[in-house]
Length: 140
Image 1: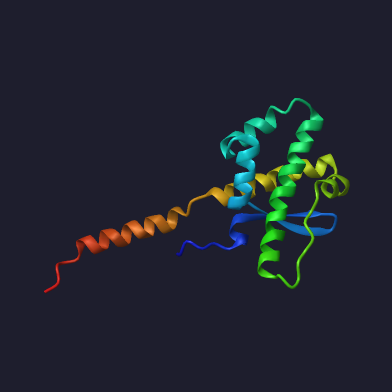
Image 2: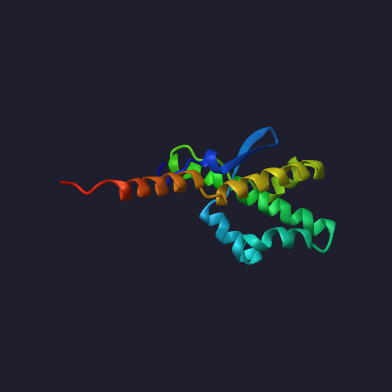
């Protein structure tokens, strides 16, 4: 398997205001998260430590908007003649309920996991291929 993965393999789909968005963890999103939290490893801890309910909601809305907009930005990059509008934090706040946000946390986690998972199968296949090469008798 090559190193190129499509967005569907590293995303989770949510519905906001009747429109589906793919949550995608891109390098750009990872940089934004690192800038805000100091790295992906600090994200969960910081979300749990939010001082109050309002701050926790703000952080989830920010993260949801960031990840949903990655698929819009990818679409716009590939379809310059048919761009889509970016989702705003205000839209997310108006088109969702706190109950929705709780459900979206699962999708956020899934997108983050898929975006950072390593393809162990292909690494194992490469190791097997390397091992087979080493076992072949020398030519001649």
